Image (spheres, one colour):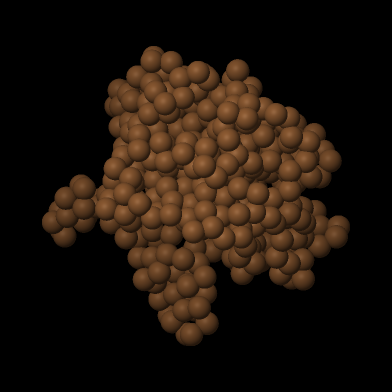
Length: 408
């Protein structure tokens, strides 16, 4: 089935492109990006890989093609993607693909920047899988399949953790027994680094300032959520830690919680480690407090007078304000706060609530500007505010493209 999708305008195409792949445990997302203009020439996703019926969506030049078919594994999924490019377009043979860029969630302290993939890099990504057991194995599967099916172009790994690999030691280190921490690689790695890197640089471009002179807080708010403090273009702190569980309240994740809750639930509720893992990552957060994970549904429940939903929103917003305050103190001087990702870009209630009561620090949100819906970067603070508050849409595929080209 083919239907109109969001129109795409292409300017200054270079004739060179990067195929960006994001392999999840049961999905394959992709985007073909023009290397010169940064335009998305095509994009899509295959969901429910390995199940009886998989959903396929392919968008190109404002037209969406949707199919439902059995996709056995990631090898089959990539074959479907290649078939869509051949049959629906644009033909990869004409796209001038110079590389395939792969999203990899966890690069540990091994990958501080994007790296061309060889067998040794594959082995390192596999060795880091205990730090991201839900993500790295799936990322690695996509890499191996793509290297086999697209052997004539270089493949590049771009790690979510790389932007935070240079955190100051004081920010990266837990007060855990040092010997144990070293032996088991327990430290703060962060996540969503590709988005934080992209947005912090787009902020500088949008404001017409050198990124090296800006002190920023970036709030990446989606179903997963993270905050970062960025000084001079380099991250000095971030809310996620050893795993993406730490930090802000998320759609289904607890965020910060007393680690002794694990001992308590194991000893007194009889929950196993795997059950607690599932509880903290999939059955907590906004969903655990309100019954819904989608922020739009949460707002509807709040409007209806649901007390659980009201509490969930209050907890969510309070945690955001705590991190803004902490990072303001850490940075010393704060120039910009930026909201990004699905909730950050689209939810004016969350944006206003996250910064409520901070006017004494020069942090304010203009209600009329905040209410504007747009896909473009925009200022939502009042004229003359000491701290500029922005909404900047993220584009992780474009950032992966840029880093892929840089690695070559």
